[in-house]
Image (cartoon, rainbow, N blue to C red; front, side, top):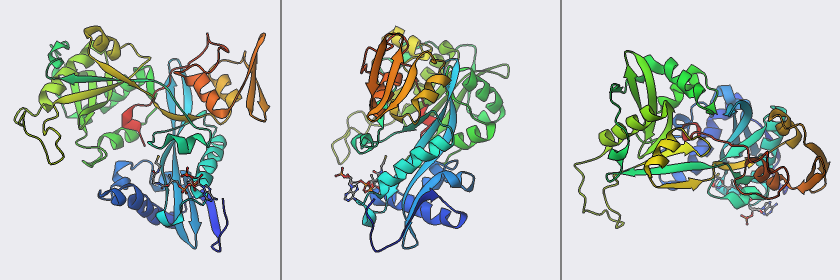
Length: 375
Ligand SMILES: CC(C)(COP(=O)(O)OP(=O)(O)OC[C@H]1O[C@@H](n2cnc3c(N)ncnc32)[C@H](O)[C@@H]1OP(=O)(O)O)[C@@H](O)C(=O)NCCC(=O)NCCS
């Protein structure tokens, strides 16, 4: 980080009196600068709040908050195991203070903080991956995104025998049980789950709605929709699929013109619904793939492994020996060995690409983060 005539204070946790100016900076850069109202606080009420203050890492210069990234800690199921995941949100530097290394210093501090909190992996979503790559982050994980439209939604099974409703409040505990039974997902409290579902209608979370399929007060499945996307679901795969079909029908804007275009030349009608699913889960994904619904595949995000030895231990892979090396780590298992940089470590463990044949029978380990949890 370059020094200037102004004193650099940080990176460090945000203090109580710094919370409001920090959220102002986030709104300035992430919302106002792109013509949106200042909704950061209500888009992510669990992240930018007094309870997570110490994990809002800031740098001040001349008494002003000028750079920030937040850490939000979750336990994420990975099949039968669980990983402690540090999500990185709202990396911003004030426009007048960029290109001095402040942002890089905040990300390095984030990695220190996640080590302190014994996180196994860092996770973030971004459209500037190469800026993070310099700092050891790499794309990893696999997600399937199915696209339903008026030509294929009716091919999904019907949700017969179930009542479809939206009054999720009385079913929140059952929703949490279904979420926890899913092989992938975060270990949420009821309070956090409610906070995530109750977020107001903003550009980031347009029309967040929860649909339930119930039978005699028993919850069979739930689906959370925002705009044109299913951002989370849980329950028996055929019931979820039936509920998704019903959601498509209810959300379909049948009164919108099929021929008109807007000022940019784009059709005014978007009669599609995207369904996000973990690639490694053949539940709903298996049902949709079985019907032949087209899908795209995407990375889950950029990941960073702060301590590979600890992560492998958590995954029950102690048979691999890890030694630190100037370029990263040297891994040994039986007669095989390889040297990997931080970014190659991410690809080795979480894939999807194979960077080495080392321990190919053990990797990649599936990793998923539901869009509802994005920060
Ligand atoms: C992305 C962002 C946080 C970077 O903040 P920053 O404080 O400028 O970050 P850095 O200074 O560490 O790095 C930015 C550039 O300065 C360079 N740099 C780093 N230290 C430097 C120094 N001492 N002197 C000159 N340049 C430096 C970096 O190499 C990088 O160069 P590049 O853009 O040509 O690749 C900032 O641009 C921002 O707030 N953007 C808008 C919000 C956003 O996109 N956030 C990320 C969303 S996931």
